[in-house]
Length: 167
Image 1 (spheres, rainbow, N blue to C red):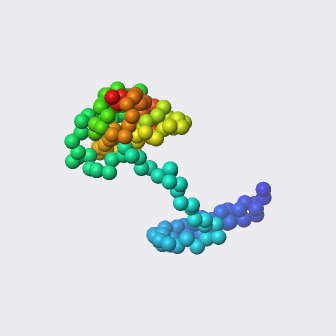
Image 2 (spheres, one colour):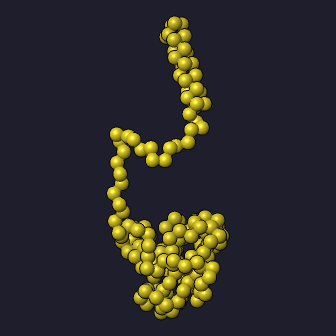
């Protein structure tokens, strides 16, 4: 590449940099306009199917702080790190109809979801707390859970596992 080509290349590169800086300066502080969706590529999403909604018959609609729980399941601090203790107790036994308070002592969100993992076809079909943010609590109601032993896991950290026995 000769001297003229190098000068032309550097000139084009410099112009591109100047245009980039000017564009960034002019447009970086502009907030997005809500409802401004004019695009030939925009497609409306279909409504979610009824089974895809995250509600469960065992998911609580009440404030866990005001509920008298029959048992407490604690998600331990540091549970998100694989190999650390995660649920306490690891194996929980309750009677059908009992209310379980799930306290998340960790700083990250977790769930208590029935099943062996995300690939389990029955995952979240019996119980699921949905996300419980760090430092918050949720509840599981067992009135609609049949007697038996159920494994559960965290959908965010699937290596976190435990078991629930309903008598």
